[in-house]
Length: 219
Ligand SMILES: CC(C)(COP(=O)(O)OP(=O)(O)OC[C@H]1O[C@@H](n2cnc3c(N)ncnc32)[C@H](O)[C@@H]1OP(=O)(O)O)[C@@H](O)C(=O)NCCC(=O)NCCS
Image (cartoon, rainbow, N blue to C red; front, side):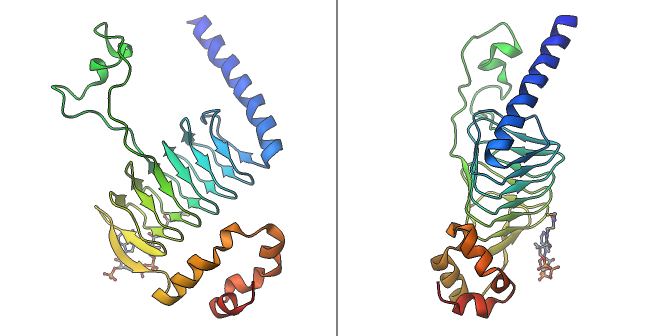
């Protein structure tokens, strides 16, 4: 009991030091220690308290994730994404084609029967393209791609790919609107401002508040 407690405390201290160093290197604001150490941060990211990020996830530049109760699993996330509290990305699946869905069939953690590792067929990662906003408590299922600039409404369960700059909501999520007209969306996809460097963003900063100025200014 005491040994387990000490091990846990040591691991927390190690995680703390690890994230202090990584935060300094990539200019991150990290309030959570529940982040797998192999996650890739492009830089200027914020991860607030109550967020869990599992192995192999990637966060593009300036993407931030709010907590509590937010779980990011098997996800590749673009730049400038906003992820609200309670969001779940890429939940693990249980194999419902076996006699039981319980993991005792493939994990020795749940009983003495097997030493075989996870046999659940892995589905693809969740992919969030750049500038996606995911509302509070939304769930994005494995293998779904959320297009650039799209909005996922609070409480949605997204089971299918979402077109760029659309707004989806409900269970299962359907398109309930789009952020701009088709012509503007085409132009925004071509302009690809999320790939701009900071000096260009600074130079054009005011245009972000005015669609016409933004679309008509020379690159
Ligand atoms: C999706 C959202 C952005 C739409 O905002 P909006 O354009 O102002 O929406 P409106 O209130 O005008 O509603 C437009 C339509 O979408 C529907 N709608 C709005 N929110 C919805 C939701 N969460 N789920 C399903 N449908 C929703 C409305 O019922 C309405 O339908 P109707 O046209 O048939 O009447 C907003 O409702 C939302 O979910 N925001 C997320 C807030 C959040 O989680 N913030 C966390 C902090 S970052």
